[in-house]
Amino acid sequence: MHSIGKLIWQDEFDYSGLPNPDKWVYDVFPPGRVNNELQAYTKERLENVRVEDGRLIIEARRDGFDGNEYTSARIKTSGLGDWAYGRFEVMAKLPRGRGTWPAIWMLSSEKRYGKWPASGEIDIMEHVGYRPGVVQSSVHYFTRNFMNNEFKTKTYDLPDCMDNFHLYACEWYPDRLDFFVDTVKIYSYSNPGTGWQQWPFDHSFHLILNIAVGGHWGGKHGVDPDIWPQRMEVQYVRVYDSGNHR
Image (spheres, rainbow, N blue to C red):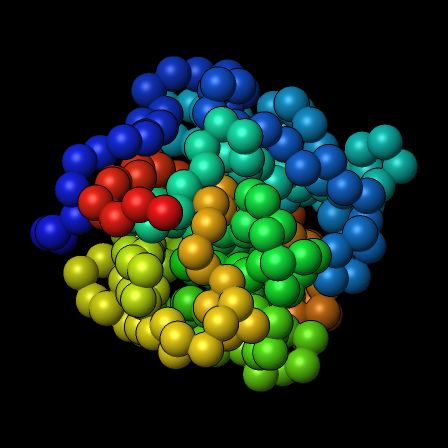
């Protein structure tokens, strides 16, 4: 299926309960901390994140927990899985409904060039519920990013992404980032060779999985209060060595 080398990290979710603490840690944020999102990100709360029946489930809820109207989970491999270059695969089924904003993405582990967006962001998959069946892959960096609405991005029509599992992947090389849905390469961003301002992707990043509620993008057309809970299900996460090293 691909030419990338050996498997170096994986979670097959062949257990039950909370995500494996040797592989995943939590971002715990209050509402509004990121992108004007409505959810509180909780820690080690089974209602928001759990492994059951061979799948990781990240669940956004409208449950009023701890005084927050919406709750969800954002888990990451930071400090436990940090890589520069390789192939990153996530087999996932997405939530549905206006106000959902699931993401499979990567951030700098070192912040080598400073705070976001200077050190880069790699968005393997995003999907906003008001635009069902359209997934998106993007990169953000110092000169082009979400805040100036000039980030590099590509959309792909995937009408059944909320009903079936699909493979979302990124192959990261020193000279480019290639993004895939199943076996289709939907986007490639090449290193322009002009320095870190356009290519900060030369140091370790970590994987992040989450569902946001609302926010600047996910809530652009409001949030349907009657659709919750909504979940992203993940069958596996795999990382392959590309043979390139810093």
